[in-house]
Image 1 (cartoon, rainbow over the protein chains, first blue to last red):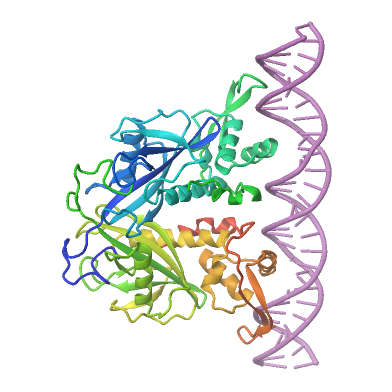
Image 2 (image 1 turned 135 degrees about the vertical axis):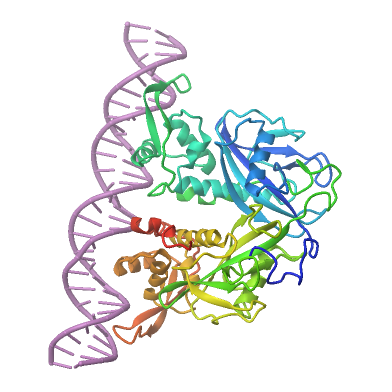
Length: 253
Length: 253
DNA sequence: TCTCTTTATAGTCTGAGTGACTATTAAGGA
DNA sequence: TCCTTAATAGTCACTCAGACTATAAAGAGA
């Protein structure tokens, strides 16, 4: 139901039941220098003063959670245009005691950025920073759990969708695309096999004719590709069995 | 964040911002007589009076959305013990105008029941009924969308998990398990190939030694199985390409 | 300039897994 | 007794992924 039936108080009005605060939390990932990084802000006040937390904020009265998430994403990253970025609802966290101050229900979102976003945003967050996902200390609230869920979701999405290109700039090499997989999954993939699989999937990537880029200064120049129009990956690109538990290893806290 | 930072009003207190009503909506599926059926309640009052809607209700001040969903599931189905049933959070719907009366954020859940639940519940819902998923008219609120999302999620879950046994009673034949797949996906599967795949997956099902049941009175008796301990399905049991769009075909409204 | 290293790209071989089949077994009904 | 139905067993070919080897094209250093 949408409201006001079932266990609703009889003759309800908007104050006949306990109101909830509704917020959004953002797990924003990027791949920088071969490492998976997360956008975090440092809390300035209690509770959890000094601890890192996921960016986020209240859903305003006239906006959806999705709209709120995109607004917060723009504010925290400092990017002027976030309309093209990948933003996906993760799940909702509603444990009654997850915020010691009051009852807060939070809709978590996962966002993916290509490499060169500004180091930290110009929004209201005092100190937003990119931090490596591995080795994070315990975060504020239940954000360890949210971040771990987000990581697992992104890893699974790479298997069944063409989402990996969302981590890449408009033009990228297959080596860079492979590094996205390797970084998120925490494994090493065979380069010829990865190449064969990506090129065999229609619409995953399309080659930019005649373009090439020297990668690292050494070695043969790599052909450049851009993201294709396909979104699904059939058959999927399954991560090796050795990477199946990596989503629960090395996660914060 | 969990609350009270970012775009939160300065010096917030619990009434410094617009309160939201938080509800749960349930998409409860079962397979009865070879058809996919959904538990629905008929609305008795405006808005959408006379229309069918998903069961659900308010999240109480001291409970999580998951707890609320399980409580509602027990009330609406009339089952005394729902602790063993599959219940999974789907996603959250938060469009500002999804309920014309007030601002309601709803956390949707998907539940799966084996065949013989009571026809309708003894809870507060005046008229809860099982209705076939195919051919449903437009539902109340945005419940068409929620139900379609739930169907798609269940169909995808069958591919990668051992979830299909949640639709089956404690003892079942492989033919019954196959019918779960065929009913949810809306396709016909090859029986020997399905059998080979299920039996080749360790922990999916385990045979009950010596037990057999006549299925339909005709034909060779089928061996009985119970659900195994595995939860994941590696490699997945992908639905045929002909069933890929069936999640968007034939869905209500 | 001639190697050596590095990286991209091409190709081979094999085994696992699946789709499309055919064959056999065990029940009930005419 | 024969026919139908449904479960179960087995075959064959094709696809695909993993593990390789080989070649091409760049820079670095002697």
